[in-house]
Length: 338
Ligand code: UT7
Image 1: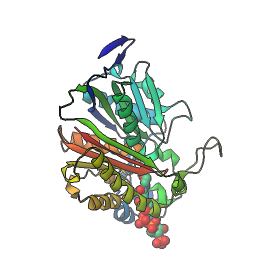
Image 2: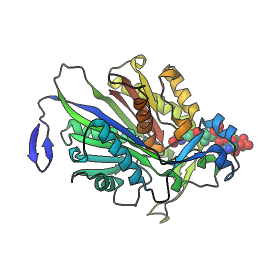
Image 3: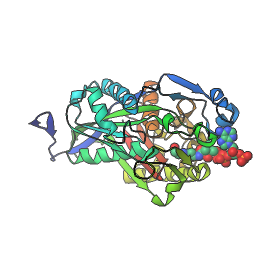
Image 4: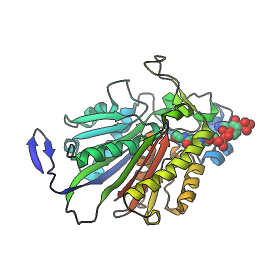
């Protein structure tokens, strides 16, 4: 590694660069809202929500808690888990659809809040697919020497973005944030590859009307609220999430049966079970947090990952697949050797 001064480092192109996950952190706002509490707001009930989605509760951010606060809290925990400090980071990418402000990015707020030095910082807008999109971008930047240590964050305050009169959407989502530190490591070409083994992202703009917010600065000059055709999104989610895992496994020359853990986007337990079935993965190899976290969009995968690592379920050496789909429709996957 060559030190360029001003905290910037340049990786030599002579050796292979592995993009390793050095640390993972998660943050959930303190307030827990149960299904029973929602019964007072809309015409719903605990039995319907549990049986149709698998959700029992969700966390909701405080009024003065912005997405960047949630993201910064998760980022600090990921840095601590990696044994690093904010000064070690030269790139921050936040996947979110609920920014503090229309601009600048949540990433620059995080940069300030965690005390990171000047460096690249930007947001990725790919809704629930945002975390895997961000990981794809960071991996590409790292293997071309543009970053040596990056924070990849998924963070959302979706509770501000929901139509609390629409029972078809408001019961499904929650707030939270998850972060990972990705670190470039030189490795000899013949050493077993670790870290990110494969990444895949795709979108189909013909399907925008299936899941969107009905507002925006250049159309209504409002933020808008979440609108969803649940059945159609469900059908596409099962197909594209499972296909994404197959695609990334082929890319990395890995057999699906060799995957130790599947960490899917947490939108609906029935989607997760259908994907596992299509992939022929037993549910005891699938990480499920939807019961406690609900759907936290871009935060759901890193939050579930953090949960599984802290529980001692996912360990060093494990082969882990991530996959998600959301508004866009946009979807993607990643395969990581921890
Ligand atoms: O993260 C982005 C990706 N998002 C997703 O992947 C979500 C995908 N979609 C889904 O998870 C499911 O489609 C939902 C959970 C949104 C809905 O489940 P569903 O089994 O597809 O229900 P449905 O929309 O077909 O509705 C069935 C019934 C309807 O009543 P009728 O018309 O049969 O009388 C709905 O009005 O359930 C009713 N319903 C509810 N009942 C009680 C819908 N929402 C609720 C509710 N409580 N909250």
